[in-house]
Amino acid sequence: MTAPQPPERPSGLSAETKQQQMNILADYRENTLRRRPDLRSLFIEMTVRCNEHCRHCGSSCGDFAETDPLSGAEIVSFLEQIRRDFPLSRLRLCITGGEPLLRPDFFGIMTQASRLGFQWGMTTNGTLITPAAAKKLHEAGMRTVSVSVDGLPDSHEWFRRSPGSYEKTLSGIRALLEEGGFDHVQITSVIHHGNIGELDEMYRRFSRLGVRSWRVINIEPIGRAKEQPELLLTPQEYRRLFDFIREKRFSGPMEVCYGCSHFLGTALEHELRPWYFLCNAGVYTASITYNGDIVSCLDVERRPELVQGNIRTDRFRDVWENRFALWRTDFRKTGPCRDCDCWRWCAGDSFHTWDLDNMRPGLCLKGILF
Image (cartoon, rainbow, N blue to C red; front, side):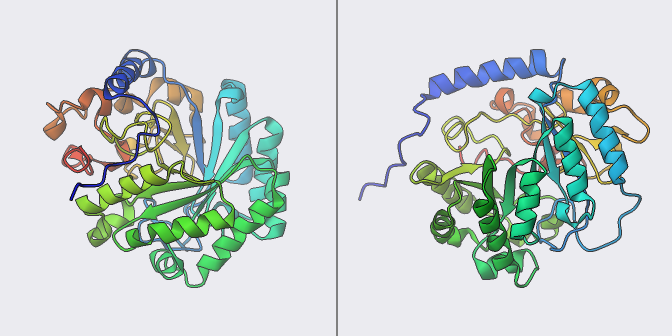
């Protein structure tokens, strides 16, 4: 029996063309971007409080007291500073948490952000989005939203340790779709060992819901997931996941795409997402934590040596232009990465899964996918 052939590449690009384009991107990273970083995405962690307690959470969010969180006035003052220092036409403001909607002053802050000229989007678990909240989000200028749904009802609620949350989340999505006026309403799903068998049924349900974009990502060995290695995917499951995304990406009204993490090898690069891999941390992306710390990516491990400043004491523009040196070098070209033939395109893969204690990637898909 002949083995089934993978679907035709959505990109239509040959391996040679891809490698030429990845080489151009690598040259740009080395010769331009690291020397003159270009802030494109600014994340603000509104809170680390959350009404769910997800088993994989990279920030270990939950229902606990915060230490010295930023006030609404401090956030707005910071945004006014960003408006003076950076062209907003090139900048996306990304709001996250925890669960952002737990802040009682959330709508006031984001209405001010919209009036200042920011285009903003949000990541949420969706459980607090009623029709009234969806209307307020529209009025506050939200352009895009990504809502987390991590499986069918039982597995979603087990994974998020939040009984009854599945229907609340889907009700939130329906409220957003019925309100309308948003550029993009997306579902994001974290796929792990326990829910990978639900991919096809998730696809059917989400398609019927009317969502037009589904971002599918693998669980990462970070945060709480490091304490539960049994949730991580096996090599066979990684291949199953990426075959599923490739097969479904443009097969219906709902686009399926992979997230930003990880170099996928020549065969899959540009097939599962509309760009080539480049870790944006510290070159395109910076983040503000709930207490004002300036960091690269909020998925990166919270370590004191990775904090570049604080918006209460430092001007963000000065920090962006003069610090972040660690993210703009080849310091990770060591261990298994030292002589890797993919280094030019991968450059150590995603910073958030880099093991700084052992100086090696915490997850590398070479040997699994290619």
